[in-house]
Image (cartoon, rainbow, N blue to C red; front, side, top):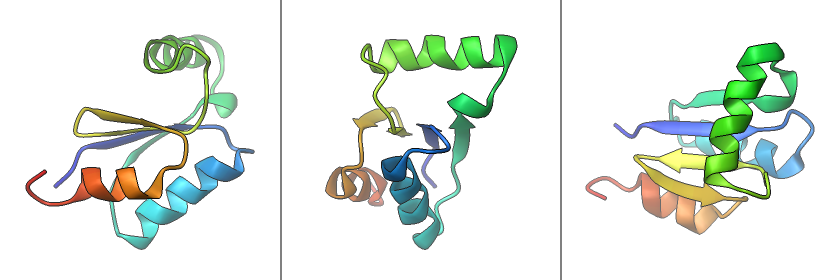
Length: 84
């Protein structure tokens, strides 16, 4: 089973597409809605986002340590393949 984290914004259409893609494939993932977090929780999320994407672009999908910036269906599906 893959370890998947998704940093997204609640209003981002590309973030919604990644969530939909993962849901359609029954992938369990940890979701971080950065714009809905508050205070220290949001600061922690943004610090991690800044390390992954200095320009703070969303979505950020992390699959077993592989970081995928933006909605890149082929890269996401490749990273999810068994034995990868």
